[in-house]
Length: 407
Picture 1 (tube, rainbow, N blue to C red):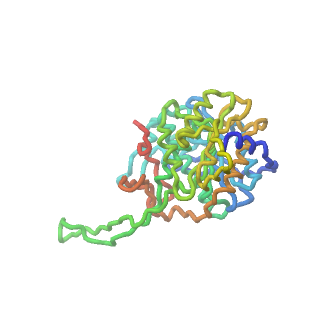
Picture 2: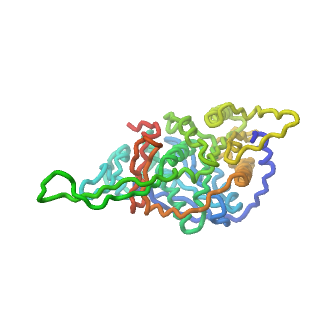
Picture 3: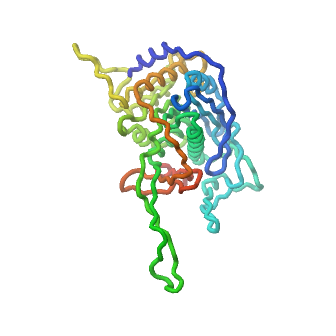
């Protein structure tokens, strides 16, 4: 799809305003942060798409889901029948509450086996029991751990899926600034996070040791590894995605290429949105597009040969991976969602257009508590436990697997 075609789509926006219905919600992360957000239920239920919004933030300046435009975009998508979740990242907006377990910085309690949160040592040990955190005090490298907030948000959507309210297997992610960058990190790890079927050997006596006091053990192995959980992701819509988080560069090319690999009939699409008058943002968007569509120039569509019709791209190809420059604007991030700009109409019609081409996955019951889950990047690669059967949450995401140094 050419940039001109995308702009034409914007001009055809017909979404009607509707009275928004938003429920204030809260849900917990694996390490004990209570996240606050708003859920906009869609009238299409499991027949509609599901949207997860990620607000922008800056070290020392903060950010929240109350920024310009998020509520307007949520209302517009809800009016189209879709479900939307928006929330504040940890330490931002209203998401400042933590449990006492948050400050348990031991790797694992040897007596109870309880997993601790050693990554939270980066925040220092509080002088007194404190139930709140503030992003203004986060060291730069800690911002990468906000990816666990997105994992918690997806788990919340999965619970809504299981109660029949939405389809979390048809997920669009919309992010701004550094929130979009953390969104890409979450996406790439989802393509390594996989449910597994375990098989047990049953009780057996461990060889060696005292023959009069044999030790009985159970051996557990992996019988089957399922598809990556990233199969639920349809598209990323990025408003001024940043190549850095808190001033630190990220391996964005590695992430985006892995996310957008063709897997089966579909691949994840991406739209890079920026203000037309923002030259720096235009350059960045072109860089990102080149990472996922090398050789494609959105300003120079290939000419059609005489007497030949242009072949329709195969479903799941990259027709919906492109740039949108918002005309006559130098605004950035969620400010591009202001009502006087066409951005919301673009997103609505981008979704309508792609939903007519790709076949949405049927909603499947997640029931994640009953599954064991691992991170595994592929055959021959290490298998790292993410959660065991009966556990509610996947563990803290191991950032070094995706090229991040946290020392």
